[in-house]
Amino acid sequence: MSSFQIVGPIGIHRHHLAAICEESHGHTHNYDHTTIVLAGRICITRENLIDGVWVASLPEEYDRGEAAYVPANEKHTIKALEPNAEWLCVFSHRDFDGLRTQRYTHGNVAAYH
Image (cartoon, rainbow, N blue to C red; front, side, top):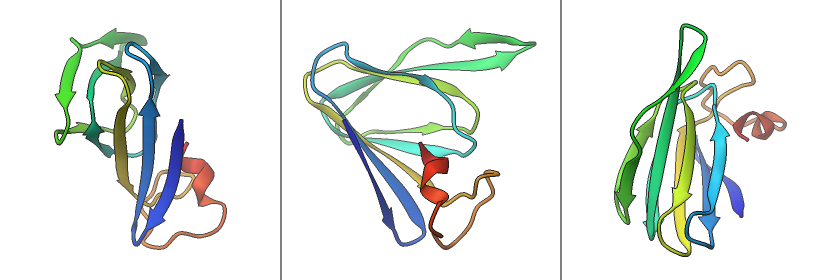
């Protein structure tokens, strides 16, 4: 489950995973974002494209109150290590080309998902 919100010049995407080992599937974005854990513990597995091959890093665990930086174009999967894990992904507004914009305009929201 997730929800999306615009607050001032930033976007906030709230996520919730109910069960242990439930995960968001690997995905990328054309923008950097910060992931902040609100409840429970999560594990982030990162993959980077090197010479045409996705290479995974060692999983990193984050507890409630901790934050992780996820750079643009880095494939990442987030897994719940405790039930009812919740986190926020926080980022600057972007247009469909990934360029920062200070003001949300109708239609931009699809670029964040």
